[in-house]
Image (cartoon, rainbow, N blue to C red; front, side, top):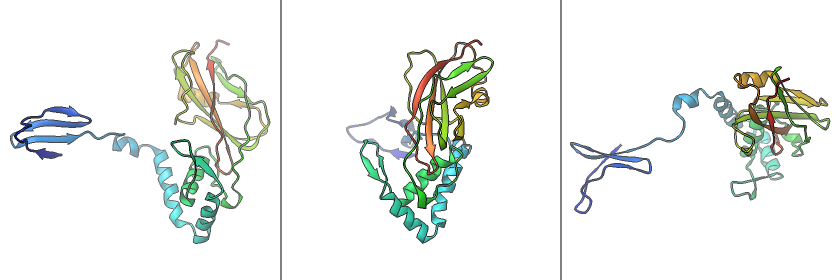
Length: 226
């Protein structure tokens, strides 16, 4: 908070501009700034942030030899930046990225000596959602040593396009050849009020053992009476 004084040209200012609020007081005009972002309590309740903090901190505990290996590996892989240009990460950034992505699909910490950016993927049929209840998808290909992850978004109608943004992974499984993916329990837990006629965008992503991810694909599905 700050107190400001008026000059000969501007003698009074009140109201809000771009998140800054001006109000009068006996000692002059007080300026306060709105704080953007999630509340501290909300952030503290987000267990994902604690795990991310743990992964970031663990870099400092690696031996010099392991850090050097991550630095060397970082020169071999490129990732798009916010402008879509491919760039190399630092060794530390690569360590954090791959360890985080592996963790959130239930994988083990990647082995820096065997990093591999090739991710196996498979197309799949339209998700089957019914009021039995049942929530499944069937892959067209047998995949091995690959995590499949599923996200879901309740939408008001079929015209809503998929939005490829960060959202909760409701289901993840390490594939060893299985084609039928049953995420019924996870769908019920995350959408307990869903019923016949509700429409969802179902998002599918694959992650290899090194923590590299595929792109995310989406298909629309409606809960049907069975």
